[in-house]
Length: 232
Image 1 (spheres, helix red, strand yellow):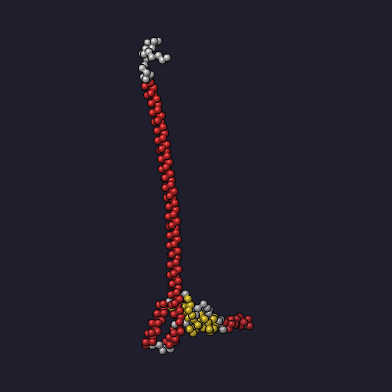
Image 2 (tube, rainbow, N blue to C red; image 1 turned 60 degrees about the horizontal axis):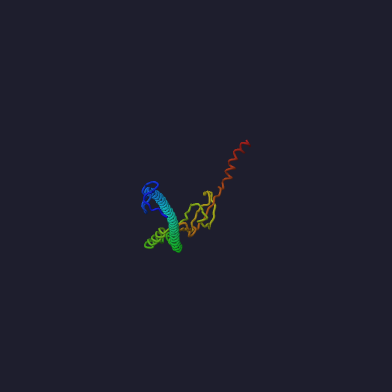
């Protein structure tokens, strides 16, 4: 049976009514609440710290990812720049080759035209040497010669110059003590060059050096005084 007396017969104190909380319950509740509040604060702080760490890690990952992307883009830019420079160099070389080939074609065409007129120049030169080139014909000859010279045609082959087999064609040979070596002494037909290209060698007569015929006589004459002194 349950004792329902409000006064405790042993202590004489009033018993709490049914449903009332025991004395000290409120304090214990505050302690529990404070404890739970502290625990929650700790957990919240820990969660906040973890969240901050995750956020920092995410930012770091983004920065690293951005750095990698920038590196890749820079590498691609460098590769494209190198490609552009290579293409520019190839184009520059191509233009140089085209210019060189074009100049070569033009010079060859000029040289061919000039070469076809060499016989005409020979006739004009012979006519001039005989005094037959006068008046209007002389003026035309001078204009033609001047135009060919301006285009790059150059004549060579003069008496007295040293013989050069690369530009001279020797058709006559002679010897003389008056020259020190192979010398052009007669020009039968002038030679012509266009730039570095020899269109026609000069047809010349060449004279080689020959010791003086009186050299031995001089030696004998020089020895004669000695023989005379010996006889004396």
